[in-house]
Length: 254
Image 1 (spheres, rainbow, N blue to C red):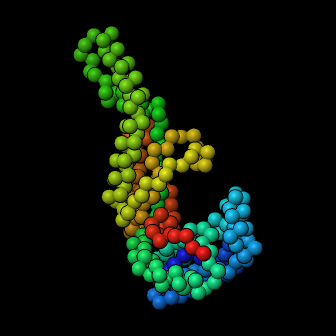
Image 2 (tube, helix red, strand yellow):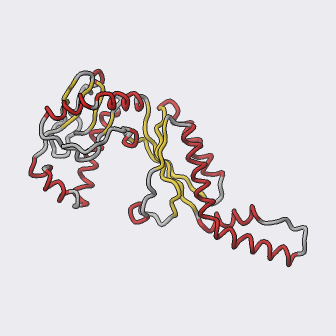
Image 3 (cartoon, rainbow, N blue to C red):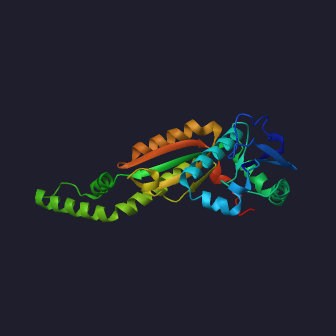
């Protein structure tokens, strides 16, 4: 199961994309909702083989890309509530049961994401640059003797080294608060392990934001302004993405 759409927003065609097993995606309807699904082989997506396959990073990457490609096609045609990778049901009837049981949740999620897209903002901190900025802001003026002023500046630097993590966390919180004001919803996600992110930079914010499609330029401008306002803080904007962070309907399924 790839995603849920409104019954009046069933995509006109899904011919341009194949599913995770090369299958043609199709729809299963229930009332005012429709699920976009694909029939996949149990020898690959059954419980035991799926657990093994999810540990194969090459397989996982390929399947994740294909899953996202299907969801992205749907997103271009209307509001979509994407399901997590490898949400598997035994037959269409169980998909219909889910649509009936979770109707209110899906309809609320569709209302939230309609006309909006997810964007990601990551904030990275240059520890040395931020430490120097904190020390400078705490450093006293030069009205006293040079020796005394030097000692005070040195104490400010040492103090800044001890407080820079609190400072960076506070700056990240302020950035997130500002970005939430310019979006319909926002969430702080877990910080990414440097090994997974491919960068050695110190990440202090991993935020996702649901932004009105009519305000994306304004949101991007805000990110740029915030990224230039703070010494030692670098912002990275990614997207647009399907609204995975704001579906709000995940559960264990079978």
